[in-house]
Amino acid sequence: MDNFYALLEGFSVAMQPIYLLYALGGVLVGTAVGVLPGIGPAMTVALLMPITYSLEPTAAIIVFAGIYYGGMYGGSTTSILLNTPGESASIVTALEGNRMAKAGRGAAALATAAIGSFIAGTVATVLLSFVAPYVAAFAVQIGPVEYVALMVVAFLTVGALLGASVLRGLASLGLGLFLAFMGVDLMTGQQRYTFGSPFLADGVDVVLVAVGLFALGEALYVASRLRHGPVKVIPVTGGWTSWMKKEDWKRSWKPWLRGTFIGFPIGTMPAGGADVATFLSYAAEKKLAKGARKKQFGRGAIEGVAGPESANNAAAAGVLVPLLTLGIPTTATAAMMLVAFQRYNIQPGPLLFEVEGALVWALIASLYVGNLMLLVLNLPLVGMWVKILQIPRPYLYAGILVFAALGAFSVNFTPVDVFVLLVIGVLGFFMRRYGYPIAPLVVGMILGPIFESQLRRSLAISQGDPLALVSTPIAAGIYISLVVIFVLSFWMKKRQRVMESAALDDESPRDKEVSA
Image (cartoon, rainbow, N blue to C red; front, side):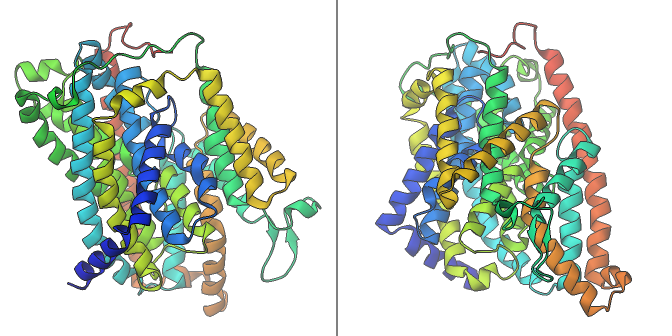
C-alpha cells in the first residue's frame, strides 16, 4: 500500500498544469523527431538533451520521459509509411506494416500500432510501478563487492551481446572505459590519459560523447546511405475513427496483450532489449496464426504489427527497472536516460527510491499521462506527422548537425567542446560504418567511474584480496546469473536471426528496396 500511496503522490505532482505542459511538450517533440527517417529513440534523446538544461530536475526528467516514449511511438510511423526503420526494434513493423500500407491498409497498421503501444505502455508501467520498488528494496542490501559484480554483468552483457560481433562490442566497451578514466585520478591527484592537454584534465563530458555518437555520428552514417530523390510516403486516407474495422480489433487485441507480456520481462534483462522482444513476439504470432491468417504473414498481417509494436513499448518500460533500481542501462536509449539523470547529480540505483522518491514517482506517474497524450497525438494528428516525413533530407540532416553543435557549445560554452563533438561524431560514423556497436562505449563511459570507485572500496576493505570479490553469496549468485544470462541471450539472439532470415526470405526483391 505504501507504493500505491507514493504513486498517488506522484500523480499529484505530474498532474500539475506546468508538469502537464512539460509532458505534452516532451511527447510532442519526441514524436516529431522520432518520426523523422532513420532517427531512433536514442538519437532523439541525445539530440534534444540540451533543451532541458535550464529546467529543474523534476520537469527535466518528465520531459525526457515524454521524449523517450514519443521517440518509440514515432518510429512506427516511419516504418509503416516509409519502410525506413529508425532502429532494429522497428524492423518487424516495417516488414508487415509497410506491406499493409502498400495494400491500402496503412491506416489500420498505424492504428493498431498506436493503440497497441498505448495498451502495452500502460500495462508495463503498472508492472514497473509495483516491481521496481521491490527490486530497489533488495538492492539496498548490496555492498561494494556486489556492486562490482553488477558492473561486471553490465559490461559483459552489453559489450558481448549488443551488436553482431563479441570482439567489436568489447573493443567499443574498452574505448568507453578509456574515455571514462581520462582526466585526474581523484585518489592520487595525478592526471591520466590526458596526453598533456589541459583541456582533457577534467575528462570528456559524457554529454558530448552521447550527442557526438548518437546524434552527429548517426546522422552522418544515415545520410551517407540515403539515395537522392524525393521521399515517397504512402498516403493515409479516411478519418481516424474509421481506421480499425471490427475484424481488425478482433485480430489485434490478443497480440497486444501477448506482446506486452513478452516485451516487459525481456526489457528488464541485461542485453535483452526491444529488438529481441519484437522478433520473439512476431515469432509467437506467426506460430499461433492458422489457416488464411498464417498465409498473410510476409504479405501484411495485422498481427505482425500489433504484437511487435506492443512488445517494443513494453520493453521500453521494462528497461527502466534495472535503470532506476540498479543504475544499469541495458540499451542505448537507457544509457542516454542515465546521462540525463547524471546531469542533475542524480544517480539511479538502490537508494534512488529513498533519496529521490518524489521525483521517481512523479516520473512513473508521468509515464501514464504521457501514454494517454501519445495516443491522442498519434491518431488524429497523423496527417501532421506525414508532412514531417516529407522534409527534404539535406535540410533534415543539416538541421541535426547544427542543433548538435549548439547543444555541445551550451554544455560549457567553449568552442573546444564543438571540436571534441566533431571528433567524436566522426569516430561514431566510422564505428557504425564498420559494425562497432555504440551502446557499449557509452555504457562503459557512464559506469566506468562507478566501477572503479566500488572496486577500490572492495579491495581496500579486503586489504587487497581479490578473492573477496566472489566471497559473498549475493556476488556469487550474480556471477552465476551472468552465465544464465549469456546462455539465454545467445538463444534469443539465435531465434532472432532465424526470424530475420525467414522474414527476409519471404520478401520479393522489390519489397527489399528501402524507399529513399
